[in-house]
Length: 415
Image (cartoon, rainbow, N blue to C red):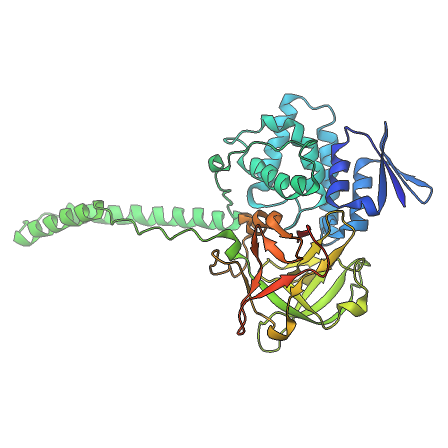
């Protein structure tokens, strides 16, 4: 086993170490300087160590492809250089850069949490008091997201105290597509030109000599009446009741038809899973389960699938969903969830939560962070049943509701 020598003030590596549950990979020891000893060789540098720990535990934190890994490296280099000995002016400029980058993104790189988010968060956390709702709303939203999905999950709220953020004051991000914006400006310009031409033509007609008969007077009256009617606004439509966030997720029963190793990543499997899409179609889903399951155990088995995530490329293969797993509190086990009684289910049967029902989104909009909001409340209890808070996962079947179980994990998290 590797040995991680970890100073108390090294918050970025500590966050990665605890979040990835890397205790099974490296034994942590208190030390004055940071280093990682692996098979007699020493690895230095917080970001190199962070990437090594992630590669052995949660490789998805290193991006879905080489391009995303390169972007992660850029952010790690940037945060090291920017926050070495920053002045107030440099901190403000850095916050503006982050705020602008996050205006149309949930995370720094790709559609999921990465090592970049963990390291940058831990580094800027101490300066977060300088962030303001009016000037950096997107940064504050991201800080709140990472502290909820990572810091809480890692149990590091003492080392990285939760930032008090009033999200009611944070406006939604406004993203302007540069191409669309350019087209809109052109359309407005053209319309303005047409309006001017129309105004000139109307003035010309008005300037013609002639008598104003009865018909002309009535026409003017009608125009005034139309203007008055336009001013009277129609009553607003009644607001639709807010749908529970959990009901927007589309969690389905899936059946793995086949599974193989990913040709470009030793830690990943590529599964063909029937989730009830019809016409004999199966979805391709990539999962980092090589460490936890031998290949033969990934064949012909029932699973639970998050079916309405936005498809994402995982090392060159588009993944069209995510299998849900329970993780032991100490990180020693990761187990696939499955229906309690597989004889009564079929691919595509949906999970629901009593009293929190609604129509799932076709595709979860990444900017809304629906999954990231509810996932920290997914858990297994002593009965090994999967829960959202205190409500069990229930599968709607023709035979009635069926619960969802983990094989042996109790008191675990689900993701």
